[in-house]
Image (cartoon, rainbow, N blue to C red; front, top):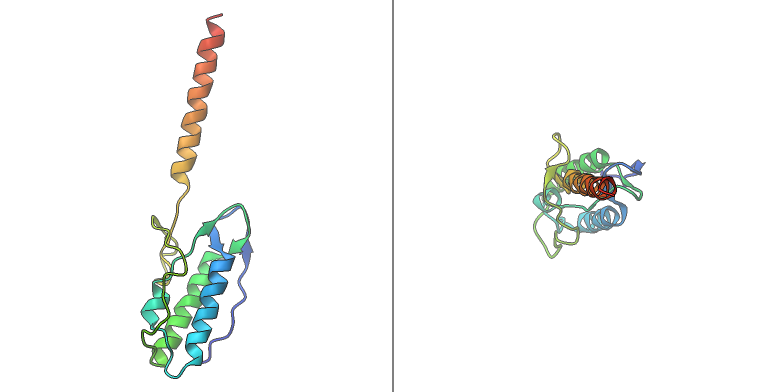
Length: 136
């Protein structure tokens, strides 16, 4: 089994993974695979987390998750071990599950709460303006 450098689809105005963080993680995985035995354990790949993006370009989450699953399998097949490679270079973004089919990346930061807060704020502002101008 030979792991090839991936090319992911990009997304804009949809939740996706930060391109720079994913690229850095891929570089670290290939550097670990260059050693014999690999200097990274499959669990370290499974533990990677990335910052979600919405307004700027990012990589398609499902494609990244699938590739990371393949990378973890490749590390396991080659006897990957925990080494000096830290898994903390990608940021942690805990809240919701990114993909039900993948264990490589399972958490992304949801924006539903932010949307609700903005909508409530707008509603309060509209009611306040209505009350002020209807009293004149």
